[in-house]
Image (cartoon, rainbow, N blue to C red):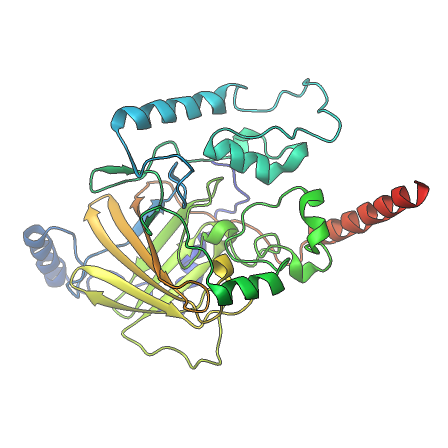
Amino acid sequence: MRKRFISKTSVAVMAFASISMTAVPGSAQETKAAAKTAAKSGPRRMADGHPDLQGTYDLATMTPLERMPGDPPVLSKDQAGKIQQAEMARRTADGGKLDPNRGALPVGGDKSQGKSFFEILEKAGGGAVGGYDRLWLNQGTAYTMVDGQIRTSIIIDPPNGRVPAFNAKGKARAAGNRGLPTSDQGESTDIRQVSRRGEYDNPEQRPLSERCLLGFGSTAGPPALPDYFYNDMHQIIQTKDSVLILTEMIHDARVVRMNAEHLPQNIRRWMGDSIGHWDGDTLVIETTNFTDKTRFHGATENMKVTERISRIDPKTLLYRFTVEDPDTWDKPWTGEMTWPSTSQPILEYACHEGNYALGDVMRGARKQEAEEAGAKTSK
């Protein structure tokens, strides 16, 4: 069951109203011509002859962005099957929900280490006191398969499946930016683990997703990545001049302007400025003009992300991206995954900037600081 803060109003209509919703052939003759072209060339096509990438896609997967230590690049079907079965058994061991009659947590909370990728994520997201009831989660149940390979990481270059280490400039900048939010942050962690880094000093230092500005873990992108908890739906709406990529989490909507020029360098956007063009049957999107408020994986505002989206079959897209920033990494790095289509509708995730919970977070941090100061004084 997918649990979300929703309304039944389609946010895609509102988001795309400024460009066009007429992504259908203009006449019966065009419809027939497009159908004949699709039958000959493979993928279904729009009236302009380009592949039709429209649809709703569920990015939920068991494949992490970065490869877990000790994992091989590719799993056999037997290996993947055993891991998937073990993960499903873990998720259902407690009946899928917390027992209201369970005993109290140990003093200081449960600080045991997670064993699987998802257990580690859940413990990090909930901290020592725990997080979501499992009924709120909608996690992937299978690994991503590309070219017949069951991948253990979305990153394919470098070959180790990991985000490259910072270069000298990146390290120096990271030391100065410690405590500032980045667009790839996941769910909040235990306050005691990060408060000493100053991440609770001001509202502006809280994660962008906590402030309802961008989705958790770069779900909106670019690059668009899985959330690994819930709300992994994306919708593509396509016309000759524009492509909309709507993300379920935080209802982020990115408009790709086709065959256009980038905005002036002094104009910066939360999700950058995305310009698209067709390379054969592949949609290529180049995004620049990021703001220094996002810092994806520690990058600068001059980061460039190049995405390539193509149709593998009637129900699947291949999504590939390359991240470049010479001021952060010496070489670009690349990832790819499939986007399976779904019949589930994408609905509004009603997260609003400046909600009352942010004030509670600040008050809670000040109370904890006062308690810790009092404890030191009494010693």
